[in-house]
Length: 163
Image (cartoon, rainbow, N blue to C red; front, side, top):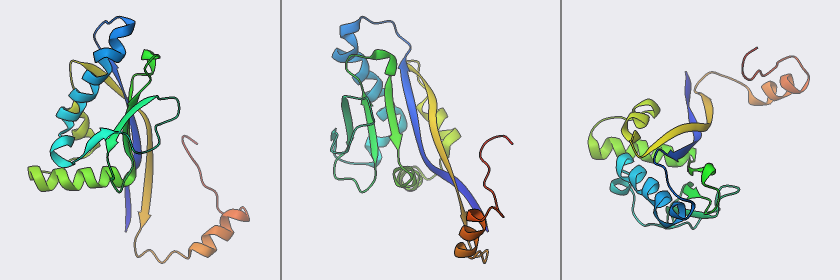
């Protein structure tokens, strides 16, 4: 059985409102974060949200996470570069935990497309800036050592994107 899934993904939120430079760090960025957290229901599913205890994404200066979580989830922004928006990073484990808890609490499954519908807001636009897909092979009798040698020796090739 081959099971494709999402390994990790990153979103960028951009304000749909016009604002002055100082307003970005005074209230706009935090408003976007709060709207995202409410819309996604993350505060219903996880505890201890606060100033980040994980490494912030490269280039971002202010960030938040679920403290002492066993997964990487971070939401951050740069205090001076408003065009960077607010970044939301889910590790594979964070996304897995979110989906599991969402289904347990709301008695319905959630997938990326339904998650996007859930977080939709007039306060911000959002785009998927990164998504890593994984494929798990279960009971396929694949010899990993043989596959590795075959790739190294050029008998098997891995393709990415359009080919």
